[in-house]
Amino acid sequence: MKRAIVLGGNGVLGRAIALRLAAAGWATEVTGRDPSRFPSELSRAGVRFRRSDRRDAGELAEVIGRGADLLVDARCYTAADARMLLPHLGDIRSTVMLSSKAVYVDRDGNHVNSDIPPRFEEPIREDAPTMQPGDGEYRSRDGYGANKVAAELVLLESGRPVTVIRASKVHGAGAANPREWMFVKRVLDGRRVVLLARGGRGGDHTTAAANTAALVETVAANPGARILNSADPDAPTGLEIARAVAGPLGHEWREVLLPDDADPALGAHPWDFVPPIVLDTTASAALGYRPVGTFAKTVGAEIDWLVASKANRPAASDEYFEHLTDYTREDRFLAG
Image (tube, rainbow, N blue to C red; front, side, top):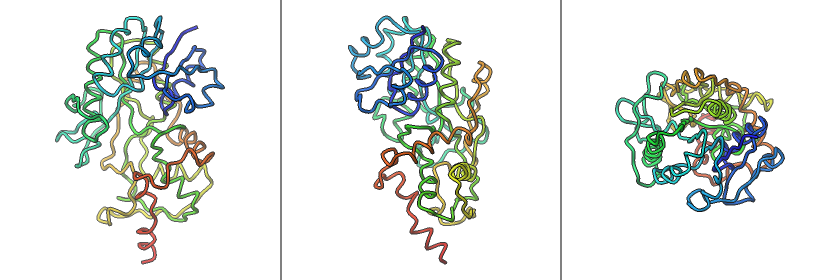
């Protein structure tokens, strides 16, 4: 039986990848520091939990042990993290590092976390310009992408079959930042109107965790050193995302498509980039990858997970969602 190790299997991508591999007959192990966070669905699927700190060299060596057919690193954020893997890569048939679209920059050097939004005029290929590698605080807006680039370089220059997968806005069960919650919450709150900035035409390519999992399985069968984008086969706009969330919940609302010169605080949503940011996934398809489905087909996994339990939802005090789900300003607008 083929052995797969997923470093950081409690998150949205690690969870989906472990489930996909276990269903395909792999002996799958996931690591984490807190066994209480181990998803019950993974346990039921036969996935083994290994308590281990990704940044403890001894514990990392113990987990990898005799090697594996596939190693997926969902916790590689810095060059230092990447260097810890180097002594073990010779015992791994295929290695995957999960990276991010956040590494890409436009012609002016802006990225998705910049103060000035980037402007990508065409789908982004894997050979597009990226941020310069950095080694500062990776949990900052400028540091996240720079550190990911540095980590990518360490692994790609190792000479080993390491595939870097750059995902976009990930959705799925277990998402730490389930952006679709802003629409799910509106449905649960019985909102009959939804406001969307710039006519709802803004977009930022979505990535189903299930689609990334399918890509990882394809890479496992085709080891190699490369970079691959991972995104849904469609690239929905904000308007299409709102409809894709409301539909399965049996909810109807009046869509108010605001003009470009409207109050920027009205109709804000996480995908509001014009022109839309789109990843080119031609290289993934050429490898033999076939997506599980479109955004509308795959987003149900996250919707069901959010609706199933309040414990899965962002806290009311969550700063990211606070302004996206504050109805005061839009109620005032609608009343006027």
